Length: 382
Ligand code: CTP
Ligand code: MG
Image (cartoon, rainbow, N blue to C red; front, side, top):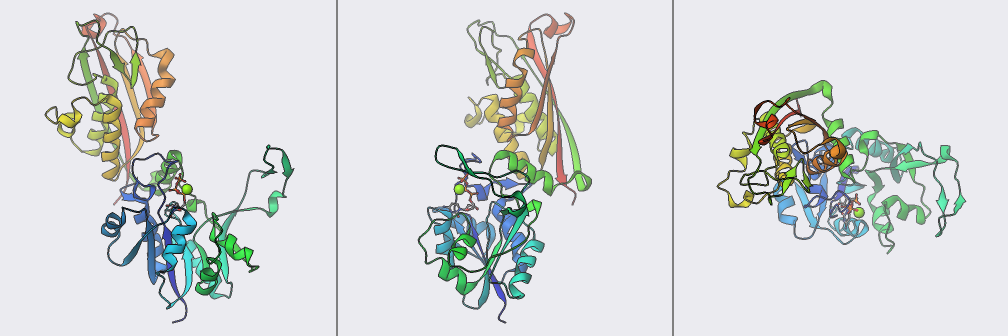
């Protein structure tokens, strides 16, 4: 066979812009890590797959991806990670695709079309999409120096395909580039652009991750699960106790009693999420006996809860919480509350409302505060 394909997947980045505590390639997307998605999409066309992992994470990657995948230590830049992976490409492979773990949803079909074009005689092939924004070149002081004709511009994606010998030669350059085709162009070789695809977009920020989840679980073929949760706490007799509610600190308000920060809105949302996912409730997940959660804030619990729901294969469609009580007045800080709650839930859609109870009951008498929440989760129908 002279047309075997090796696929290099650089995954050595830290994912700073995504802001997760773990490398971006290990972040969950609808029940699987980004790198598992990328490998699964490329595996059908690959004779060999080489993944460049962040230093220190090699064993974890190998465990996750299995022995069929070669895991190597990545470098300080994407270019270096590709270079290091290149050393491991078997000589039996005539072609090499260079991909990105961050483009986890790029399809097998896209990889096949890149390979078809190589087999038809091209030496360098990249997927690209027409751009919809006008692109301007600027100088160091941000003055426009050129406006290229938009119709001639393409936004370039991966996987990018090359003949093995060409890519190895191109990588003898010491330039640091954001795409491998750039190195090939510098050598005067023709690079062919073929049609890219929307789903091959690069996951860079949290909002990209949510877009990816939506793309992966279109409503039409998803299972929907609704959940409900409530929580109540009594206002403290200790006037110095701080009030935390809906992820916010409320100065000049008396706090509530309880072993945690007593954020009834955050706790109700956690319960709604756990109930929708069938993962038990707040108590069974964050038992009061576990010292790890003794001092945890409502926001910390929400973050942990969202991670467990995601690991169980669910995507949060939306969360809605209603706060019931005389004080504090929520309206003026609604946007702030939505922002912090959504951030804790990885960018999920959140709504916050509030009501009083016409002087009736413990909330009406000003003795305590309650919250009731619903959550809607999506999961691919199996
Ligand atoms: N990459 C790599 N080695 C590096 C840096 C990046 O292999 N030293 C990989 C990333 O893992 C990713 C791809 O190159 O799959 C594209 O990079 P990018 O999307 O910028 O990912 P990160 O560098 O991880 O993200 P950030 O720039 O936000 O930190
Ligand atoms: Mg980067």
